[in-house]
Length: 364
Image (cartoon, rainbow, N blue to C red):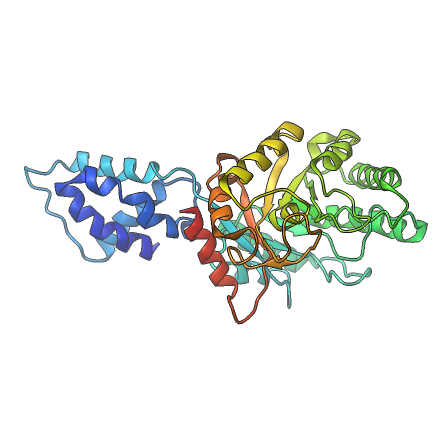
């Protein structure tokens, strides 16, 4: 907020003499700080500016030549002109106690975030402790970091033709829907699994049966989000047509939506590298599934080329999708309103904060 306020402090002085000129500068100079204000309305820019003017000891003498009402009106209108602000976040660790994930998300300047509710690499897990749940909910309410997204563990395969694996996978999905409800989470993202050579029809029957069964066992408001896959061998859900077939078989459509992973989509053959490609891909999504089904974005670049089938995430702007593609994607009207979760690498080239800054820069 201080950064946004400092920007507006300098702009406000110029606004007194030439509001039209300064108004044109607002979106480009302040968009970088949009999501740090954790808002969905540009009005927070005006709030930041006013606070900065007062706390920073900057006093404006509204003389007869300057109309106070006109100035404040300009400030609010300029902020609103920037449009809705993107909500950007990361997948954060629950190491220690699960409520510490909220602390980590706050420290990383997230507006939203994603977690595993338990160890993602095993079948067994502990019941959520009452004190941890209460502290988790308390911190969420205090920080307004919403929505919080949970992700299914790695081992379940909801499309498996093997009875034992399938049974454990359905049980795991049902358990995760319950844990999300206990924690007060809105969304649970799941991979769709592999039919392991049994064929798409078998995989479709297995996964739809698993989802319908798990949702029927959990009469709550948690929405299950189907994540598109990268098109690896035997995988389910790499095409919009696959996702449509799964949604068509849902007993309760109000409980199932889509999580769109940009790296997976690109690897599966959906072009996101250019503005034209972005428009065509999102038009296809809308015509096939409808933007109303789209609830969360996994914002990742791709190490593999278009249609490569490689599920390898890359830092935003560094991979094959590139900055031009992400700039067009982030400015699309259907995307700006959605929570964006980064699942990018952490290495010497860029850390998590670096990826957050890049996304905020490209969405400005």
